[in-house]
Length: 47
Image (cartoon, rainbow, N blue to C red; front, top):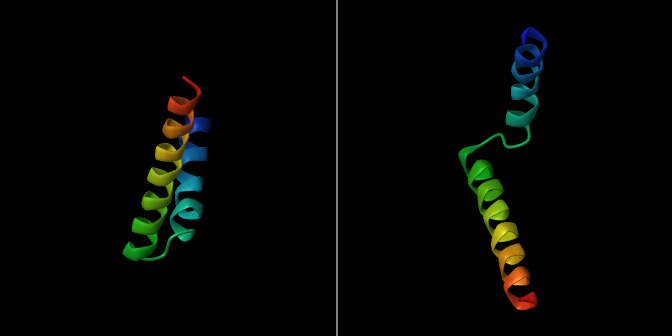
């Protein structure tokens, strides 16, 4: 359990450094939302 906690704590700065600003975070979230939407649309087309 301590190892998992250590890994999570050490990975947070790496994740946060990928998006330095609030605008960057918003763009990342927006991109993830688009990917989810596109994936859902692909599944619907196959049904």
